[in-house]
Image (cartoon, rainbow, N blue to C red; front, side, top):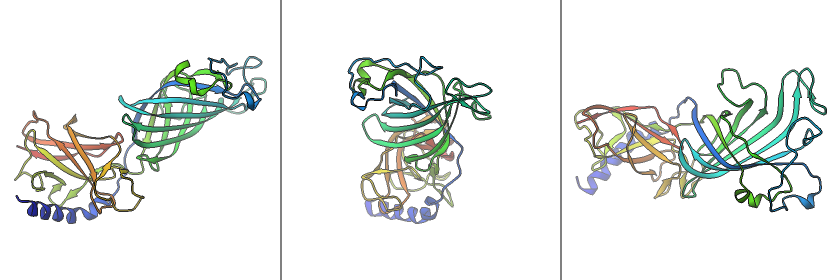
Length: 338
């Protein structure tokens, strides 16, 4: 098929997909296992601003706990760490938290603690800003809630806390859900310690589990004749009459793969050469396929093309295909394999 015929075939396909690409879908939570290194908890144990963040050495704090050998109730704790992996994939990024001890307890709180019907140790904010390993911003998840005490009903967790996801940006725009932990703590430090030496002085390792309900999730577009997955050579649909083959390069068309580079404002059409900036992956029968490229279709508001190679050992018959962006996965679709 010549270039003109290929262009005509792609144009015809996009006309069919125009409405479908705009559809969203309700999705179950996506689990993000976030590993955080060099976590330090800078505790408000001094009141002289001229001494904040000045000491280059490891500077122990009183720590948290019953007085008198602890910082007092309502004294803020600022927590900083390096995000190093998401779901086992190497990443970059920053974790920042803010904890305000309230030491609420029933029936008898600590001296200076709060009387309450439940046990909660602190108010806690979390901010997870995730970047790719090569330094591209992916998105941010924010959460808020109580530390200490029981986990939310029905939530298996090894950390006693109740934290809700209250929003997100970038690939996690509009996210909701909840957060739990699986262990690990930060190193307690005085707020006199210089956070510029955090990696030199070292900190703790923490793993956080985010159950993220995204506002939208990747969705492979559908045509009247099946999934919008084409032979990349001529953009004709993969079908029973023209099945895919082992090792062949295919193109799938999808929505909701998130932001692109160069960036465009929300609701505006993509320019040429708009690359999806979240990690994108394609699986065939649950196994990773070779990912080649993911771009925003020029002129589309929420339409993407993803190129991938079928596994060389794929069996003949029917195969399921899924695409994910920022670890959020689409529903599976089926295609024919020759």
